[in-house]
Length: 426
Image (cartoon, rainbow, N blue to C red; front, side):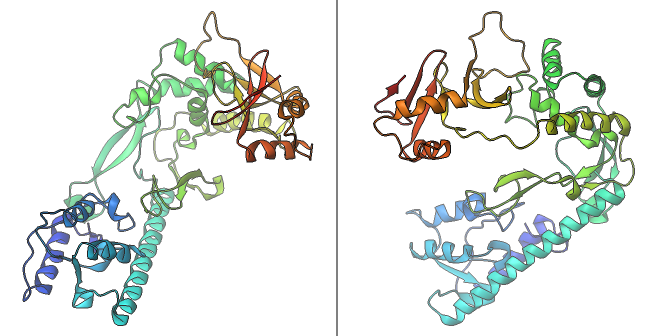
């Protein structure tokens, strides 16, 4: 889909088809069309449904065409995608025609090679310019207008329609503006969480009580937008994320998260195309005025954040776990969590149980082990393959290099290969 001048799919498809028809007018005709809508050129061809179908059709034994005509280079390719696609098509005897080249492209032609370098650079430059314009516009819309820019409404809110889109073209397409309004079914629980936390209750106790009282968790309330989540109940992280969300003060907030890197299919940027990370608070865009009805006031929100900040810093310097990721539970097989207790590093396994649900009446006992105790046992467990350097970090590196793991149950410690083999027991 073209974004030039806010073109709709019908207009974009029409002019690209006209260009293609003109290019092959004296050589043949277009027999089948492949056109992707709402797919960025940054996505690889494998990620675009129509483009992937074109490649499959070209490689089929009953292929209906002997050439591929592209309406415009920048609508189809980004970066070095063109060379990969052309090489794949030429391998099955299909030529690629470009209007910028005036006909079929030859990768062996110095002139065409120079043209492709230029077109690739222009396509990347246009994507970067478009990204900059979009990001700047979204920042201004959040900060000045307090506009809701999409996504799932936070738990406690629902979307309300407030009229047509302010952009005339967007409005003609039927697009509307939405704002957040309190959800009568869930807003009260958000207020309750902030009130209880401000009184000093732990986040885990709030999650447990919500589960005990049968309060639906966010992913259960909105199953349509959360099909990838189980909706089985409240967990500590869910409650904590609600207590950290400044949108409950009535201000619109954008750019709390970002993604960088390449996706598995070659896409650059955007959701699902790399690691999603939380931005620093200084990078957020916050509306200058209230954008929707607040569920908590500023004073209460700040008070709750101070409770968490105080707990985070009271233990002093960063905690270090030498054997993190190398200790496995001998009861359930899960990798044990690093756990700091009484000023010492250790490891524990709660057998998949979180702090949210109530503990069963007859639970399997948790497994706890101190790191210093494990380090004392390791030379004997590793004999006769004990590393020459007995420093804890060297021992941990030895375990990792040899793909070994430490298995701990209530009364048993052993070192074994991660992928099966001989075991040393103590």
